[in-house]
Length: 284
Image (tube, rainbow, N blue to C red):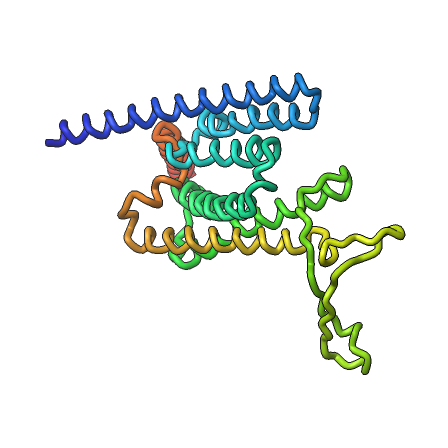
């Protein structure tokens, strides 16, 4: 019975691995094809994005080989699809403009994934005796949530910096149709007065956009809000996962872990250190 179960798990693992390899090859071919088209059109900014995408595709392999951290197949597939969706589809194919909620979808997924990585950091530290901690499930969930939100905030800093220093438009603008402020209160009281906006004048020209252009604030807050939703969802799943003592497979699909070989090496190192310390104490 155990042998059959082992063979079944081995077959499923091989199937997932072959599917992952196929996806990697397919996406790389698509990125190279897009890059060739951008070179032909002499759009060097998009060529840079294609090169960046190919580099980012190597992150899972780097984490696996250099950091000895095993990434679940589900997590790895979502990460490479996320990168492809953000850079190739979002930026080059302009999905951010074609589909209203493309950016919101990606930020929600980002919040979800970063919370998963936050959980994994605690789990990986707990597997090392030198950093072993006894933390309540609620604390771990809060840490994962805060980790995800911190990454979200840092990303918004990056978008602001890119827009400020390189004149990009990563923080998408929004047309605001009215504005509320205490400045417009004729009596000078601390009561906001709402004024509708139909047109604005810029450099002597009237812009009839039905409002004024908000420079990124609405986009930033919307991104952080959907990141918040993704972080909360995974944190709740993770909380029940820990309380259930690791039962269930859904959360495991998103949590990286140390490789068994690395765990064994850590255990051997700890055993050696303990033996050496015991020998020193005995001599004393």
